[in-house]
Amino acid sequence: MLVLKKKGQTFTQVLSRGTLILNIKVWSFLMTIGFRILERKKKVALNIAKEFLTLPVANVSDSMWRLTAGGSRLRPMHKSGQMAGPALTVKSRPGDNLMLHKAIDMAEPGDIIVCDAGGDLTNSLMGELMLAHAMKRGVGGFVLDGAVRDVEAFLDVNLPVFAAGVSHRGPYKDGPGEINVSVAIDGMVIEPGDLVIGDWDGVLSIPLDDVESILKKTNEKQAAEAVDMAKIEAGEWDRSWVDKTLKDRGCIMP
Image 1 (tube, rainbow, N blue to C red):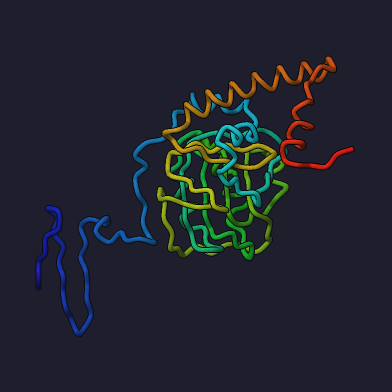
Image 2 (tube, helix red, strand yellow; image 1 turned 180 degrees about the vertical axis):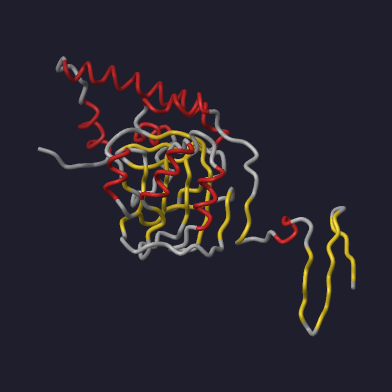
């Protein structure tokens, strides 16, 4: 028998008939990339997140210089309404929802559960039962790079859910997977605790450190658009920039 120490903890290593048996006192010792649950260190405050519920995702995207991918394949599975809250991230293998189940159990009220399942639509990731459990837990919404089923249930309860598609085939529950790690959906990188927003134009993630500056910038854009809309209604919207831009770029016009 060989007793080893790691970070003040001990575990026993026993060799018997060629079999390695580990008596582990701390599960974290075995946590490796691909099958682990990490702690979310920080997250966007809910009161700040709620201020985005009145802002169109398109305008927030413009305020981020239109460079952040928005997961264009992800479409709303609910009737209406906007979504905004801190990301609880999940990475799972395609068609498996073991870690998604665990994420719902871990979720804090208002969390947006973001699951990177590779975009595969062969098997659904969640359906009516998981949806009901999530609502009971106070989950604020879902972003699923995969499929759902029991679509009518999603329409009935109207919890914001964005998914890549629909499949009646159920999921597996074996793992592996990870919780509270970096995920990427259609080029959109999302860190645990980042702000995730969504409306009928799609989903967008805002890095935690940039949330307040983007909020300020988007509010300014909203105010400017309100002025433009008033000018349109009055028939006074300046369109001279269109011909000027065409001319500056060498366009031949009558």
